[in-house]
Length: 191
Image 1: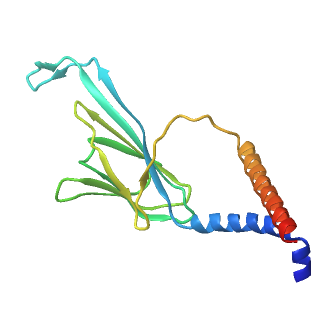
Image 2: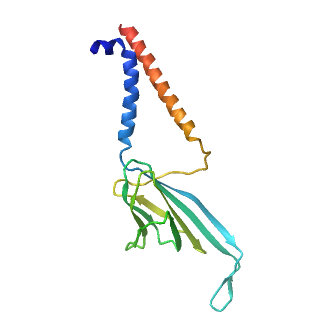
Image 3: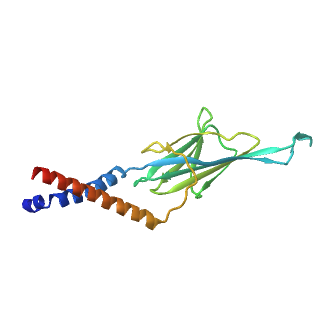
């Protein structure tokens, strides 16, 4: 068996490298990974006057502020007790997908929305809105396992899944080929 491996050292090293890389990638992804981003935030002037109790016009125009917060667990394990903390409670909010959550307010007035869990590859969206007042800032996203990481979101062209798989396959073939030539070179020098 040892003779077979030494006679085919280049092939053994190239195959072993690909298998080791795949195994290490899977091992490091076995935990929950929580990413979040503010998908969009907009302000809309509305030509609707604001009246007081007596019917007098206080403001000629009103402003509607909206924001959308997206969170995803990109890991391979569920994230439990996922908590979104805001500076204060948004006047109007909704969640998608519609599911159970707990809301609480701290002694300092911070408001948090807590999900029991977020499954691997699951996406959760919080839409917030206010009229004539600022939106609360999202101050933290965390779970029992990991702290959420803020990422920037930009529009991106959708790529076909078969094209992504082809790119991965060609990359692995390229890495294997490089390792083969490296092992062949080392074998030629030593051998």
